[in-house]
Length: 278
Ligand SMILES: CC(C)(COP(=O)(O)OP(=O)(O)OC[C@H]1O[C@@H](n2cnc3c(N)ncnc32)[C@H](O)[C@@H]1OP(=O)(O)O)[C@@H](O)C(=O)NCCC(=O)NCCS
Image (tube, rainbow, N blue to C red; front, side, top):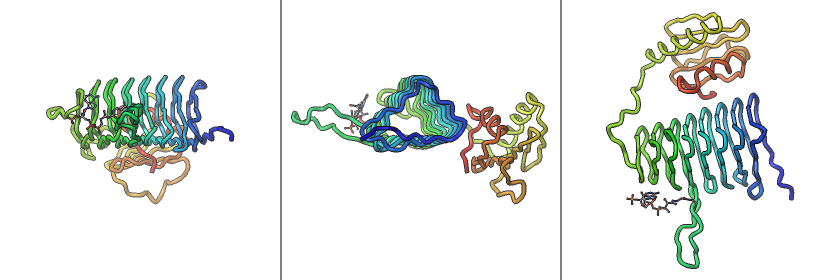
């Protein structure tokens, strides 16, 4: 039986030639979306559970993704150098998740000698929901943990229990840091104002024309168009392969992969704004 790995990938990925896909049992399907960056010496073990990676993720040098269970990563995630992501159980990393340098995530525990009565020989599931942030580095996430949407674990945490959404934890074992204000939510008008600032900066550097109205901002490079919409109404005109719409309230965008769209997302995605393909 051959153990060739079937890697299906989209466009504009930057996968370093030293990246290895390594069979772990009978390898399942590897599906990689578009515009991902996978750095030198990243090792990805592929078991029957397969590997699914969305768009615009960055996985830095030396990271190991190891196991034979399912591994899923959504869009816009960032993994620091030398992270160790175990998917012997199931590892689900949703959208916009940040995993600091050298983080270890474990979905199994083994090696306890069963003949001597050791209890721990289990495969579990870990889920990091949208916009989870394992800050800095050196944290550990235990098997059977779900970190809720926008939760944060500060550097060097050992996360041994579920973390509720919008909560910060720290320490070993990690406990809630109640007085840490994680963010100040912005309304749609404030978001439009920020986007306008960034569009002005983006267009000034490139000499692209743009227009600003109360409910939308539009820019173009002479060939392709971007329109940022305050509300998620579906436009009835202007929909085409050369035109990308970004919706501020749903945070979705109509992915077209035009050069302008990719240039704009590259400008935004580090820590200004992240959008999900509709
Ligand atoms: C240790 C382990 C087996 C405990 O699992 P469990 O029986 O479900 O028990 P819990 O997760 O509730 O942990 C029991 C207590 O130990 C604490 N604990 C677990 N890991 C800890 C750590 N690294 N540092 C400090 N405390 C820890 C928990 O916070 C919990 O404390 P509490 O009862 O005050 O809440 C589990 O955390 C685990 O599997 N860890 C290791 C995973 C691993 O390294 N796998 C690699 C492959 S072998």
